[in-house]
Amino acid sequence: MVIFAPNLNWNNVHLKKELEQRTGIPTFLDNDVNVGTLGECAFGAGRGKKSVVGIFIGTGIGGGIVIDNQVFYGASLTAGEIGHIILKVGGPKCGCGNRGCFEALASRTAITKQLQKRILKKKQKSILPKLNGGQMETIKSGAIARAFRKGDQPTIKVIKKAAEYIGIGIASTVNFLNPETVILGGGLIEALGEDLVDRIRYFAEDYAMEHAMSRVEITYAQLGDNAGILGAAVLARQRLDKSHDQWKHADGIDTLI
Image (cartoon, rainbow, N blue to C red; front, top):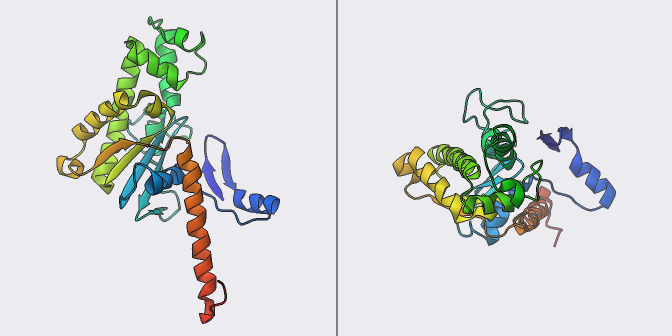
């Protein structure tokens, strides 16, 4: 079941059941960042790590927690929703209904709104519209990256502030969970690479407790869009194996090979 997807306006949608009825095959359901983080743990930046937090920055901000190669879900199956921790009380409204969420401050949607405000409303001089095909309704990550590297001041200011919020979010996660690795993914991270990740590391180290951060690696995803595909395959295999074991040992009968 999709419990809550605010950007889709979905509540308690029986997607697994619907897919199984339409396809006639066993179906396993999880969100994109959980399987993306699992994919990175199996084949990418988190390989060999026992505790990993994935943070993927796109339309929203999603998080995934993988411990000993298993996704951690929490009591209500909603663990990892890092995009909805509050970083600024009374801040901009988020799609979830709260204000000041991480997602409302540093997602690509939030970055786009800040750039539009500076360039369209405040009339700050910028090369970003030209780099983005002459329009500002939607802003591509590649255009933001090119503007940033060309020294465009509105873009630099917005990205630096977003990096600070991302760093604060990571610092809070490190202080609380202390994972071995934090993996950053999503289109903006891929486009800006170390230009952005270096700034995020700086703020994360500045805001986190020194000892908590001392053994934490902050890196970026290696698998791109394949992370979710590979992670979904790993998840399906894990759950099929679990179902196999439960059947195999039910009532002491060993019948399934």
